[in-house]
Length: 388
Image (cartoon, rainbow, N blue to C red; front, side, top):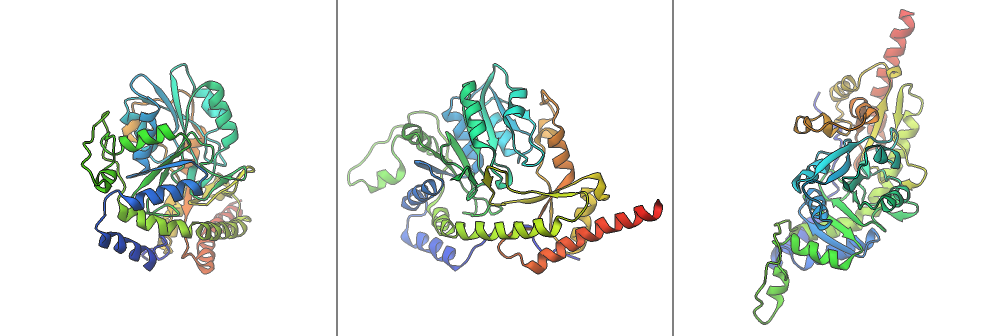
């Protein structure tokens, strides 16, 4: 049976199509006024003073490290339990990623797991709000300040999540965001850096546009010729006005989408509560998740391996995914030996799976998905009781 319940569907409609078409008809399709408006709107939504739109969250992380002066000889602590782009950004600047373990319930690094691998060469930390579940921003920011180490927040999945009553991103030194279609809101591809430092934001805008001291948009608006200068080596990491036009419509959907996802997540938690050997992700005490990903963790008591569960779900028409990857187990990082054990990371990547969660998911869909899981767990218990 082919999959009929997808793991994720972006919420896109006629409004986004119209906004993109309007951008095309305007004649301004590259980085321009819509990008600037998207930056203002998004940064205000997450409680930051400035937004710098870029081509992806990966390029946002890359530029954040450049802005902090991170380079060869530096170590940057990152969670191994994250999409590989988090670690890759460290390599892009010539620094060395140092893998830290995570909390088993949140999938996030903690002060203790960071301190375990911190050295005199630690030049920065990238902490991830994993799957939209916020990490403890108060504890990590306070620790990083005490250590004298800048903290970059990989908020790729966290638009609409909160910590201590404030949006994720509020009060952050540098936060990097993703608008990939797997995220709650999307621009197709695209990313953003948010921050409160005006001078650093100006430099980031130069770096995303080849290091030019004046943007192409400003040059075209001027009635007089402007001879630009290239102040330092930069990159072409720009977002287009077509993408930003879509993003502006998506921003208007965010509150409703997060509320709907939280309702669906609560229903999953209720339905799954009685299944032995299965634990479902939930809010931490200090914040609320947007549930960009809804994952469950299996223990031996469940009786069926994660990969077997994925196979059975696929056969039942459900497109689930393995849990979050562990970068240190990938061939690309086989030469990077974690300085400490990563038991929680390895258990989560081995024994967790991501269930479908999106705006089009129905209660019947959830009942079907949970029914498959209950059947698998019940089958194990029946076999076990017979054998005993």
